[in-house]
Length: 495
Ligand code: NBP
Image (cartoon, rainbow, N blue to C red; front, side, top):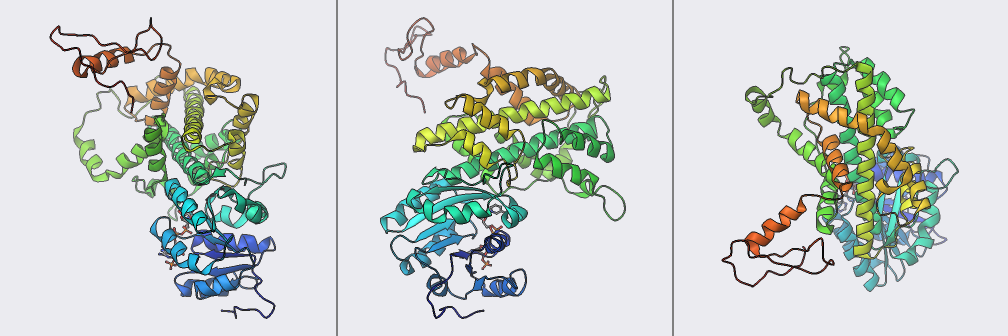
């Protein structure tokens, strides 16, 4: 490692703590853009390996202690944390804070839970320091060559980090960086969390198309590669469709498709679950992402599924086989189901962002958020331009489903969407994302739902009261359904 206290005073532009895959690649990206980065990792062998390996012949400075990292930085110090989310972030902040001066800036670039970011922003501001919680998406390649960056936190820190973060971010076609200030305290990490939830949904709607085409319609991997390659040039143009095309094309040494050899038990690291938990807390539907999370959970019950597959009946004539549909028509129907379900998923995601903005008092720019996801991140897709356009037409749009472009897009996709769900149900192939998205769509467009019965039942057993269609909202009524109840009613609050 190099000497730390250069004769002319501190020279480093930014410090980075945590040299795992994301940290290392972000450092190299910053170095490429002319910034001098000083790096520290808890296990110093990793720092040495980095300096002797990927960071050889760069301007990166490696240090063995956090004190040395702080000493090497120009004021106001900017220090990015790329450590595992949770306790490691608090521990690193605890070690750093006594060494910092008023106005210094800590940027947490990991996948931290937004409520932790709200707490950390407040705690550090109270100590005279500035904190940014920034979602960073794009995985290893994004970190190296241009991720999507979603910073939020203490706004006075933004001018000091703006140039660095925007220079390393992905750029949209006109050169605008996929990095902009999202909002106060936890807004950046919340936006990243919703991004990840949507990513779960996008992956599930693609997985359902794969299941229907492979198992239901018996397409070969070559055929699926060609279908996905075509889809990637149309409405579904996106990174996840692109990598799925590559995955279909990949074969093992023995010539069999690599995908066939992968155990069908999906993992997860929690951000999809957090999104759904937040949607439940805010009382907004995130049904497609919830189904995507549960689909992974069900897949992980591998041993139980193995036993159940031997005993549980399908109740259909040719289980797992789509019949009675022309292959080309069926592929088009699946395309439409995927596209319409994706629209529902994003509509739900933006409704959740709107609900969170109200709850946490964030001033979010939804069209801009869609552009932050346009390049660099895992859900990057041409489709995001349509979302930006929708919010430009009507900034207070309550749901993307009410925008004229998406009204028409869903109208066109509906016949194929319904055909796909019916065919899947008839052949016993699970399509939780397509079917729940359709159920949400049908409920959302229904002027009247059977919730009057739910209200009657609640009033019957618990005197929870109900509102009437012939009286103004906010007036509550109770019926003595059995003739034996008393006049007392329960509170009419909604949780
Ligand atoms: P990991 O999430 O695997 O974290 C490993 C890093 O955390 C190592 O540098 C490790 O140091 C450090 N660390 C741990 Br673990 N506990 C620590 C502690 N108590 N004090 C100090 N350092 C500690 O790394 P990653 O995959 O590069 O991800 C970094 C962050 O970025 C995470 O929050 C992750 O969720 C997020 N993220 C990851 C991706 C991705 O594709 N991997 C994408 C987007 C965001 P050590 O070497 O001493 O163990």
